[in-house]
Image (cartoon, protein in one colour):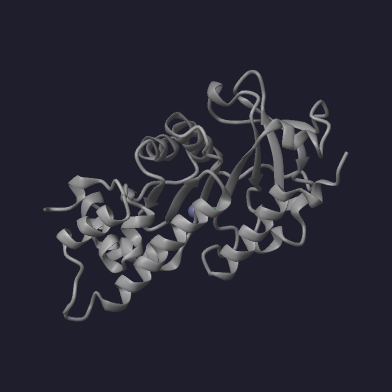
Length: 271
Ligand code: 2HA
Ligand code: ZN
């Protein structure tokens, strides 16, 4: 059996958490990540018959029975994942009842998965239903994106159009736009259901005045989506209070998408 601390999936999680912490997105215990790991990858490092303990999940996830997830721990700080992954992360399998997580590694201090697990697992189910290659769900509190949700209309067309207009890259990176939820109480099934509903159409879902959810086939895709939204929001906050002299028009955005062969959400532009 190989040493799990050398596993690429652990190293990817460590560097994602450190990068996000250093970008200032994950203060204290802010943020959480879940990473779907194929059974054959897990089996290189762990005896999959050896369950450390069972932890109930607060909803029924039959679609995910037998699937393995590496998940950040509740109350744990992203800044500490790099130095002590075995305390701050856990590797779970969804048991055959669809209501229990079997812990195979991690949460060494007796801890458990993030309080946002319902939103994560429901989002995995939603993304997998439209993209069987999806593996990562990432939640974080990017500063400028959060600030923008205080001052901008939360209407999805308006928010997406503003982000697309901040720099050339945005419509190319997230052509479907961004889903937006109003401020809601977090950590429960209700926000999980609402997030997952949006995740059927968007890889990015904003939680107003809280943070963002990103999805992707790997860590880079989820991270890259969030980082590009955050770059757009940063730019917006730097110029929104000045008279705007130059803009990318809707027609130019359409031409850009055509040049890059991008199929964007047409109803978000007025052509
Ligand atoms: O895990 O970010 O939304 C801490 C949070 C809750
Ligand atoms: Zn949060």
